[in-house]
Length: 75
Image (cartoon, rainbow, N blue to C red; front, side, top):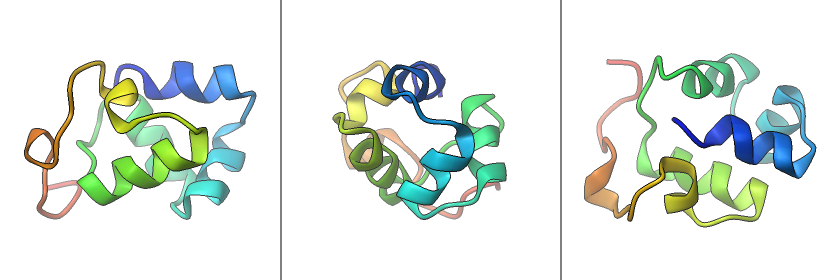
């Protein structure tokens, strides 16, 4: 995700802090930041909430549930 790392850094969070606030693993945050996975909509919402931003700010586009994968992550 293009804007996740920038949003995390702007918020002053480490990967560990963001993972804890969002309720996901550090490894998963790192993989998302590097574009190795496309997040589920629920994961995108958790990250956005933890960062205090809208989900579309993390994707760089007008996001809606159909814009990100709704299946299992990492497939």
